[in-house]
Image (spheres, rainbow, N blue to C red):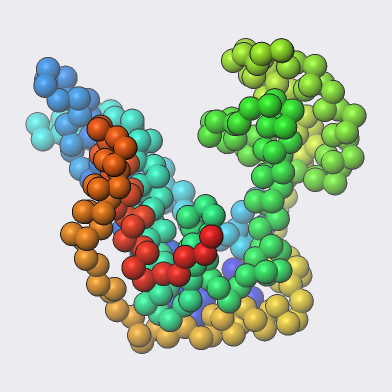
Length: 307
């Protein structure tokens, strides 16, 4: 959306990177698909197939440029016996970090092959060196809001949030009127604090999370507003200065579509490193953790690390 508004000729190329990376990740996801075996020997029968619908979004709930896909998988897979069964989704969750690394690795390799200079951020995601500083910060206000909300809750609860708890707060914060929430938080946080027991229990934690989520929701816009593509693009551009727009245009314009080539990968080296590293202090290692370690090590061969 942002690329279209700025007339960036290589914007479609960047979208193609995302689509190829998502397709590559879905291939891995499909390969993991299976159903409960019930044969007395195996837990899962690998079926390697599913039916899914893919929705591509170009912005987040705050209308910031945020290209991402939603893959909705029907809970059915076909077994070797020709019958359809429910999917064993546990393997999807177990392999979530590996699947994330697969997407990021593919995306980064395509960007690098087209002449981009990248580094890995603290979350393990590839970033364009040319678009750091103010440009990056202005493009991540939604992320900043969520991180601040999670920090507020953890500070009151005195404990780290689980992924599920973090997702609960993220979902209820859509359309958050952040300044209004900040103004009310100083007084209203006493409601959440009052639920904290001397030694926090699961019950206390749930009550605190429910109260905090309700507080966040009360300062959110729950109404859906109709907006055109042109209005979204205009809103995205408004946050950048003319110099920043020029910087974005220069970065995207510097890509070289004709230079594309798949980067060489020495799989043996990465497997050997991962095995040695994972078993250094452990005698038993989950397969999906080993796979993640292999992919994570592979990326160091052609990208610049930045701590």
